Length: 277
Image (cartoon, rainbow, N blue to C red; front, side):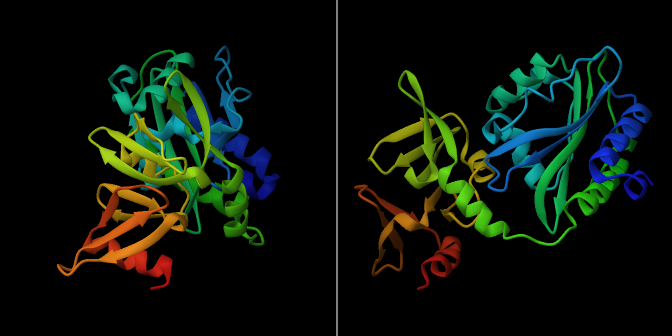
């Protein structure tokens, strides 16, 4: 009814206030992804009296900060965190942010529109831990209504906007004693290395990143990268040669890198489509 009576932005705040109060949350919020999924921003928030607001802090934040959460949202999962301290090492930046906000429990539900992840809504418990269960289904219904009201307008060139935004977007990598903002145009490929990921760059340097490959799969925008093996993803614009061995095995020569990158049978179909072969 709020969505029918009010402009979408006001209605969303009304919805967050209502569902947050009914669920006994201390804070209810919504964040939206930028088109390339490399950054997000907190757009709407309701807080119980005396509970701090962080909406101004979370603007154009790299998705890498919530990479562990983003990976699960991309799969359409609701995420309930009841023990902030128990989050895995790969969720370190997210854990630090939750602790900064003094969160005891957090519930997050993805918002999809036309099969694309566009936002997330959720609850925070600040005063005492909470375990939300029955509220999850209701929050999914709210997510569907919000998506229809906020994004159900004449379509725009999403793919074009993503490509334009991604070309200038940066992913931050630790290199020696510094952190370097790296464009997607500089990333030749990614290879799994146990709990880490080898990030190979156009200058021939390999950066060992602490995020696992599964987390990177949720960070890189669709259309740029191809998963050629369960342990490897490549930027298809840097494929120089495809070598087909007598044994039937495929290997790629990537940019100016010395090592060849093996292609699994499962990875060949998408690679063929991207390269037009």
